[in-house]
Image 1 (cartoon, rainbow, N blue to C red):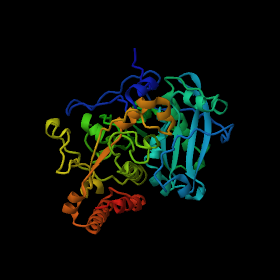
Image 2: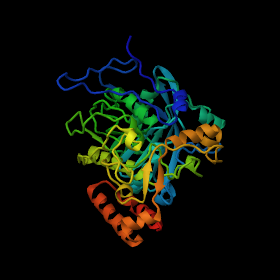
Image 3: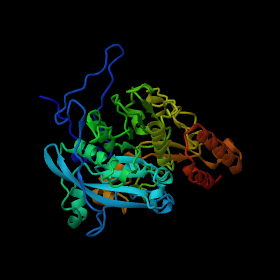
Length: 461
């Protein structure tokens, strides 16, 4: 019997938190030839055009819309950038059965600002559009659009607003075709963005990165009605899988959590059919530990890391868009160094004298440090009250999951800061000088500059 690849069930997400091990596609050793395409039930063996689903008019009620992107960096929210959010329903047939899904479009209110580039994602099973949340300021500052596609059970939407979402219907086994069909619709002149889409990439974070990886065999054969490629590139983040080769550029962004436990073996390449980059950022955690509503107020035992995670996921997206749209190959990055010895410092990574990782993509936080940054945190007991529906519903279990996936900091004492920098003024000059270098090298984006400098200005010693 052919192997049937299905999406990871929601039950597994609850069991392991937001981090779910995805299906991986390791490359064969050199000299053993290419890996043959597996026969996968429900996926054609040859390129096949998908049917376009039917798109509803904009959904405006009844009642409130489910908010899948509540975690926005302060002052870098959609209102600041003049963006609008529109919800639609898309319906059709996938895996031989009818479906009705939710599609959310985030785009400039002024259509003339749309860049023609689109970030698409399958919504995380937790109810979050993490790929957009973790790159939002860059996406909106650049005039890009973001598309969110529901591919898991719609039950949480029905629980939230049964009248608005009663028609949603998705079954296991339909995920890949839904991703392909909605993507093809977005690229067409019948889609919600009209005929203005130039390139589109598919991204994911943690569980939704697993969905992305499970989609890749389908990507190799599903095409638009005009037999064009549906997605032009891929950005899986917060995942450490060794991912198969495909016919489109792919940038993988693991975090401290993955570097400690599951290091990808695939090497960077510019060869057609093997275009790949691995971006390991020194000091970022599996989830945003700074602006995440599920971590406000802090339910964890240690102080949360202020490192601006989205600034570095956005670096990956920025380089991926340039790769697929302008054929500009991204810079290659050093990998975080490993000693695979936890007995010396509690980490499998090589740590510097301050306890921060050596190697990888650098940031001002680890190169001009005022703290040690690490993972994994733990929850305070009894649980600290949190307004997030996720934590409120799941209580201590929810807090434990979020803390386990967050990063923490251990600030340096004032005496150590004076030894390192002499004065606050000298520290600020070094921080800004390092930020200038990272921007010139392509490892930091100007849209985040003011936020990073404001963080540095808050340091007192």
